[in-house]
Image 1 (tube, protein in one colour):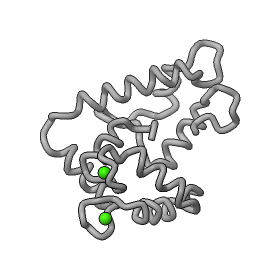
Image 2: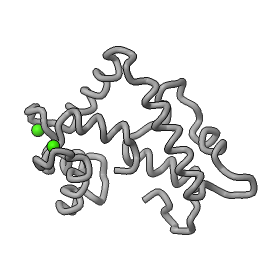
Image 3: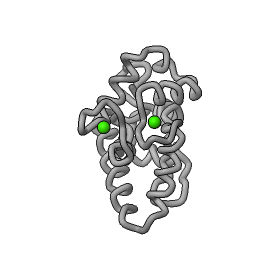
Image 4: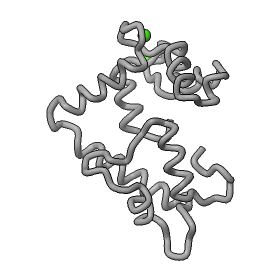
Amino acid sequence: MFDRDGDGVITPAELSGALGRLGLSLGVGGPPAPLDAFVAAYVAPGMAGLRFVDFEALHADLAAADDATHGQGNKEDEEMMEAFRVFDEDGDGYISAAELQAVLMRMGLPEAGCLARVRDMIAAADRNSDGRVDFDEFKAMMAGGIDV
Ligand SMILES: [Ca+2]
Ligand SMILES: [Ca+2]
């Protein structure tokens, strides 16, 4: 998904573009750093971007940083709840496939045109298999971040 041109290397531009499309930022748990500088720290010498192993290292560090911010009170939860409400349009506490599709459409993502794809994304987060995403599942999905 990140490696747009399929050359086995994720360039900072590809990573930044993919995260932007997902509405994610890398500022988790710290001051927002310029993405290029952040990613550059994971790029091996002589490489134009991240190889798969580099990407894994970056992702692991992001997940660790995210874990470290948990348990610091309710602020994170409140922000997460706000994000959740963006998806849960009818406010019933669950994100349905139709609701997710509506958000993807607003974000201009091509996945919105394919309900099967939207259902796959729901299924990936739907741990109790009730066909919709509750707040806990949503939080777990966001904590797991980008490998939806
Ligand atoms: Ca709903
Ligand atoms: Ca569920």
